[in-house]
Image (cartoon, rainbow, N blue to C red; front, side, top):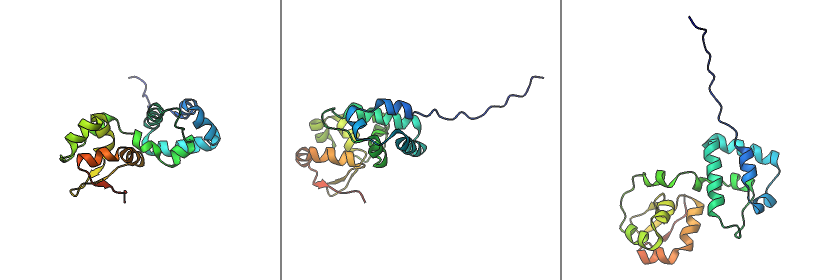
Length: 160
């Protein structure tokens, strides 16, 4: 008979070095040192996974315009700003949501990717108020307040 083979579970590769290199210029200037940020990265990666956290950072860097300014990586981690960039658009689209009457008008005005990313994950209340899922979504909705109002939404509620 053959020798017994022991298999050990593979640990997920630590992606901190990739994240450290991916930071934008302003994010580098505003950030803390590498040792402190590595500890934060490991703590938050334990919650959501190394690869998912790195993909969230890449998504954040792709979406933000270089001129608007980035916060430091440690602020991005501590504020859990990555939360908005974790789910893919496909995953969000698969979430079963009760239909709300304003959705077709919102898609026509803002486009389906915007609605899927920022409106659908939130809660649309029967009285016309919306509670966004993340702070980023709340800021995006505020930027488009006139469009939301024209579509029939009353306003934005804070998360509890």
